[in-house]
Image 1 (cartoon, rainbow, N blue to C red):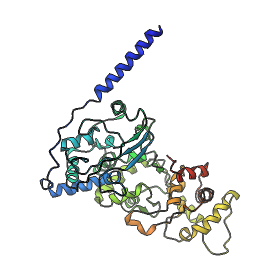
Image 2 (image 1 turned 90 degrees about the horizontal axis):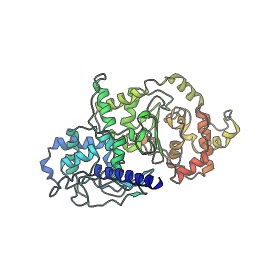
Image 3 (image 1 turned 135 degrees about the vertical axis):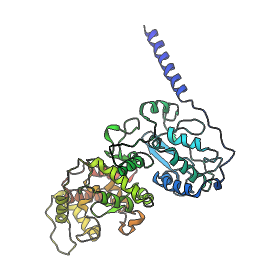
Image 4 (image 1 turned 180 degrees about the horizontal axis):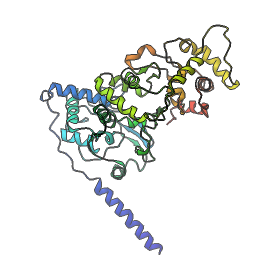
Length: 431
């Protein structure tokens, strides 16, 4: 009996292996002799592609800090190991200079490279599959007119068995839904435009939707918030931690400028996103705002109460002013705040009142830790609202400060294990 079971098991494994081997076979698309001449592309098409590439944040993931534009090599940490972005300049040897438009379109729509190999979904083809052929063609025209850069990205650092690309055939079978965006006839044009951009090139869910154990976006928790590269992509649904309910005007301001007076300033991975959105059309940004806000329709509007509480909790830095009544556990952090923070965050200052920020009201303290450690270098439209880094603080001092900020400026429960979180963020382990 044991021998029979072993034979059945081996036969099953062979069948599964055979299926994956078959499913992972895709024909190569013939290479071009070299990159197309830039002159063959219409200037208006290239300009359109430039804006679309910015909407897709191509440069964010494909330009390393010390490297040429779009040459790849950016390290993208995942729960399964590190993936390095590829070179998407028209270099014929190390980039996509030998890729036809058909090969590029297949990569964007199906997650397959020119040679037919499966691409890892760190490249968000699960979103890009929604993008129209016309827009893909414009992006291709833009990329093929950029300066070639000869650079080969490092090999991915994936543990066994995640480095076996054939397994991605199974991942796609379970989680990947190919197909272009189809407009919802029950929604207006602005909402549909926003949905097309957010679900396609903008791939907003990649940072704001949690993933399952296999790294796929959870369909049951769209825009419910997620952790990415040690930061928290905050919830954009009805559980948004913003004390003041977002309006279309506020969301548009934030997406274009990286700042809204009643919500705060963009930070971390959102900063380059805002910088790239700043050049998009007003209609496209309004569409994005309309789409995102539709997920917050059920959120309770406590704006008046939130603003009143924020005004009540603002502090002054008048010498000798009595300290507010507080629990003894908050007093060390209050002392640090009065020494290091109150000059910018006092009553009447230009910064958003701390009580109105999503960072302090979120259930996850990562963003508050990151901003306090690193400081704020806002998007270019809001550069007047910088904040210095406070990495000079010890883990205990930083935890004490954040404990006070959470306890005094919000009505939320205390963040647990703050010192541990501070240490993990500081050492790059908060993923």
